[in-house]
Length: 52
Image 1 (cartoon, helix red, strand yellow):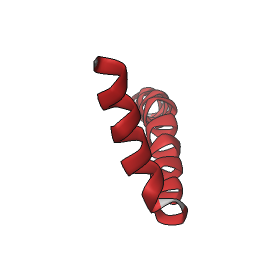
Image 2 (image 1 turned 180 degrees about the vertical axis):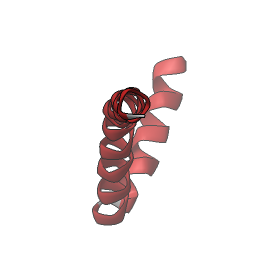
Image 3 (image 1 turned 30 degrees about the vertical axis):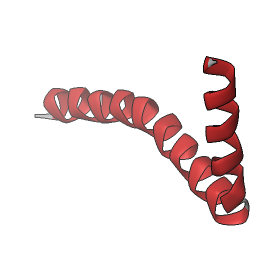
């Protein structure tokens, strides 16, 4: 029984290690968009001009 819980803990740890960076990146994007809403528009313009 203890062995199963240990493997589950290990699996959860791996999943959290994989998911945490994604959450941090999402939080960063959300905060940037919240504080600099025109940054997205500038980025779109930059992406559009770099395509041409």
